[in-house]
Structure formats: structure tokens, C-alpha cells
Image (cartoon, rainbow, N blue to C red; front, side, top):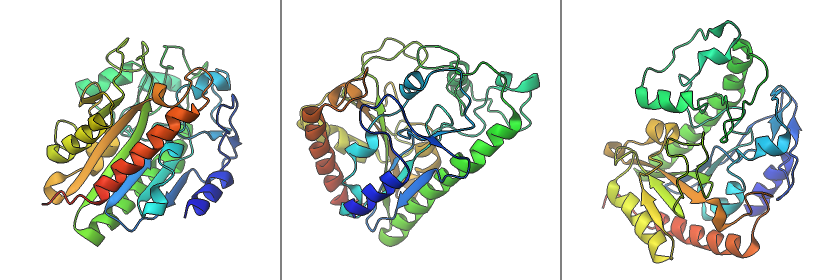
Length: 310
């Protein structure tokens, strides 16, 4: 199965580790890969995509855009299919469309005429992120640099939603539903990475020095707190610093699919990039990667042996 996943990755033109450039995708390119699982565990990586669609038309150079990626997350978990773990991966970049946001998280001021003809969130906490430029479609980089030098059209964003957001969410929902149907419960890990230090427009906590890991379950609403603590304890035993629900509680992909009352557990796991890569060049650090890769595999094996209902 590892060979199958590598073939899928090459088929969709992933950039090589440390490469400054990344491939562009023609409009018809498929933007989501799913490797079906056979266990209760499902992993998804919504932000590691490196295939930049031709219709993006951003005003910034590609190396600047690439700093928004959850770089190499798909490589950190490339053992998943061999363990029978369901895997869903976005190939489109988050700076083009953020699959971990709801489609109501839109800044109407980005559009020609300032009009977005669909529902817009009124949630005050979510609106704080949208005003930072981190809604469904990003307005600013993490450093506050405008991404576009033009107004967007409603039609192009509707097309991004149809091509990217809906297929991605459908794939995650299908894998979780299948895992739950097979075993009576599911454990969904939403896989992310984070910079060592939060930039000005990255989060609501600019300048924060992140722990090695942040585990989020939206204050126990998307997963059993006991299961989340089991993940925290495992990582701490391996020598990592871990924060729980701060500064990241988890966003749309755990909110939408986590329902612990129905034995559907969704947990967001953020990994500090300093553990495995050079944040400036995007190159993997071989020693850091090898350690982290082994520890993540051991964590997933622990989850495979865990029934949250017991």
C-alpha cells in the first residue's frame, strides 16, 4: 500500500522536499486523494497541498505563497495506508482555498462590488479570523501581506468550492462513516503543522512561541477528553511539550465530523515545524523527521489499539 500511495503522490505532482517552486494544475485536475482504510482510524491532511491551480492568479511569488503550506505533513503520516488507516489528502493549497473553514467564512469585501450572494457567518469568534484574512479564501499571508491585487469574482470562488472544498469534505465524511460502520466507533485525526512562532496575521495570538504539539478537541466537544488526554500523555512521554486546546482548539473539520456521543471522535493535532524542517527553505531535517515519523507511527498504533467506548 505504501507503493500505491507513492504512486498517487507522483500522479498528482507533489513538489520535491525543499523545492522553491510547486507545480500548477490545469482546471480539470483532481484535487483530493483518498486511500480507503479498514480500521477505526482516519487521518486527513487538508493543508499540505502543493498543486497551485492556474486560476489562482495571486499577486505574490510562489515561494511566498508556499510558506502557508503545512509543509510535508503528508510525509509525516505516509505509514497510514500500510496500517489500514483511512487517509484523505488535499492537493490544492490552503492559501487558494482553506478546507478547514466553513463556506460561510467569507470576507465579502474581497469581491467585485463587495457582494457575496451566499450566507456569511455571524459568529464573532470566527469573524475575528476572517478579519485577519484567514477565512475560506485567504486575504492576507501570515505576515499580513495582501495575496491579491484584484477583486475576486463570485464565480471563481464558487468554482473553488465545487472543485476543492466539497470533494474534500465528502471524502473525509465518507471515510469516517465507513470506519464507524465497520467498528461502531471512529477516531479521526485532523493533521496539521504550525510555525515555531505565530506571525502577525496567523492566529489570534501573534508572537506566541508554540509547543511541540497542540492537541485540540474544541474543549471536549468533538472527542472524548480522555482520548485527547491519552494522545497528550503519549506525546509527553516521548519527550515533547504539548498544549491542549490552546492556542488551537480545532476548526471546521473536527467541528463538523466529531460527535463523541455517537462514538465519533475528531481531534486536531498540530505539529511544530521546527521539529522536522527548515522553515525558511522548506527542506526536511532528516534526523528530526525520522524521530517524529517513528513517534507518530507509534501514536497511531496506540490509537488502533484503543476503543474509546471502553
